[in-house]
Image 1 (cartoon, each protein chain N blue to C red):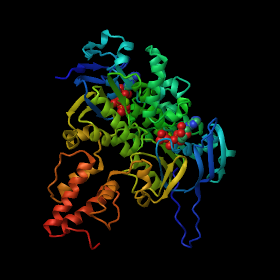
Image 2 (tube, rainbow over the protein chains, first blue to last red; image 1 turned 90 degrees about the horizontal axis):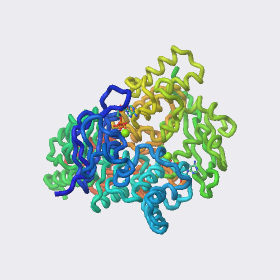
Image 3 (cartoon, rainbow over the protein chains, first blue to last red; image 1 turned 30 degrees about the vertical axis):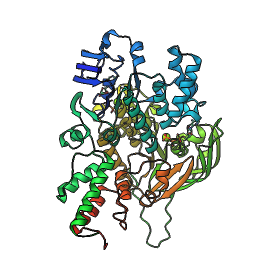
Image 4 (cartoon, helix red, strand yellow; image 1 turned 180 degrees about the vertical axis):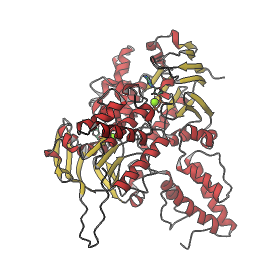
Length: 287
Length: 302
Ligand SMILES: Nc1ncnc2c1ncn2[C@@H]1O[C@H](COP(=O)(O)OP(=O)(O)OP(=O)(O)O)[C@@H](O)[C@H]1O
Ligand SMILES: Nc1ncnc2c1ncn2[C@@H]1O[C@H](COP(=O)(O)OP(=O)(O)OP(=O)(O)O)[C@@H](O)[C@H]1O
Ligand SMILES: [Mg+2]
Ligand SMILES: [Mg+2]
């Protein structure tokens, strides 16, 4: 059995001065090496939830454990070394004069040797397609570049749990695919990867487990096909199905064709549609 | 309050006024040796709906910044060529003047926050434009309603979630009701339903009130079939421009690594099976084409 990375037990949370509960009894276990996407409408509490994973926020009620340690009794600095969080707004994260220094910062903090820092920073910047921009100020980057920098500055110190709030914002198709590959590699290396995203296509294409939050509660937790084909979940969490999913649902409804409504990956659905056309043609003796 | 779209005159001598005109524009940010924009020429008529796309770092935001004078007035650098907004040379007009004509939502909404509360944030621009309090109050209610955020009216800005903040900033720009609206990734933090509602609204104000809409957006599924023009940037240059239906089929898009919406992408992949059909852009178009294939075994003959 795989070890548990994050364990959330009956977590209740509200911000100071507010009397509205933002998180209302969250229960959740994420194992080491898992890849999880969290979806949910604006204001549903996603960012608030992940801020509990490195102890930045502490539960009002209930318990959050990271590698078995209750976050109430652990220092944020210690947790941060094992749990890297990339925040929704990267601007909050930057303070260095150059892209290079921004990425190197944590390594200096953790006391790595100059040589090791040099090696790691160079590798990470190249991985994130930022090496050519290394002398620029983080604040003069494009939106997409800033987000890749925010991720680079976390990846560089190799935390065990990587949490990214909205990783695909500002990324073109090429960078999205690359990001998915990187996250995959990390999970295969035994890292735990958690993303919060509104990018449904990205979530159902690349994540085997999806958690849906709505009004501070988990309303679904399962494989992409369990979630994306469920009208109730989709509507409650303000999800819009990717067009290709809507297309095959409508195809099966309107034309009564036999389609497999469990596929979620784009290429699989394309194949499904090709099969429909082929079946029809051969039944009519064409080709 | 809203200006109706101009009807072309019957005599055919009507010339649509240009909303934006860009001539031989090259721009270097201060201290950079590589231009962020290279020899851009672009004309956008009043009442157009224009999508700007391109890979990360290709110059989309930079181009948008020239439309309200942030470039060259706020971002320093070397600017060659000209940008005109409704005939005004941006070099000669302040951001303040231009912002009466052009409303812009930045890519990072937080950079745009000016006040502490949601209500003040939306009122701010209106007060500057000298509107009376009752009009301001009406406008605030209207845009909060449009963005589906009435419940946030009395909230503190820095206590909002990412998507909530983005909706407030969009609302504050809509409230000023400018003729030209420039949105730089306005839905990046919105949930899919909110994003779709907002995009539908941009189409509505374009269609019904003749607003010129210029939008950098990754969620193209809905707007692609509606846009009058798509501009594709790569490395600071325009590499494709024109009708979305045509531009989307150009191989350059995949070559430079930008995303094509799922429906046209699907039919690109079905090209061999369905060689002579016009590429569908919407789910409805796709359904009717596939419906014909399923009913007749073939669409051949169309
Ligand atoms: N610092 C804060 N003080 C008070 N309320 C807050 C604070 N931060 C967030 N909230 C409120 O808590 C709720 C949940 O916010 P959170 O940021 O967790 O949402 P989210 O699911 O990440 O939304 P989004 O998709 O818009 O990013 C929202 O209603 C928000 O207004
Ligand atoms: N203020 C600035 N100073 C210097 N260089 C800048 C500045 N803003 C952007 N750049 C650079 O100019 C280029 C174009 O940036 P721009 O922000 O226009 O790209 P973009 O197409 O909007 O990208 P994204 O999709 O990632 O937001 C990038 O290489 C970027 O690093
Ligand atoms: Mg959030
Ligand atoms: Mg940009």
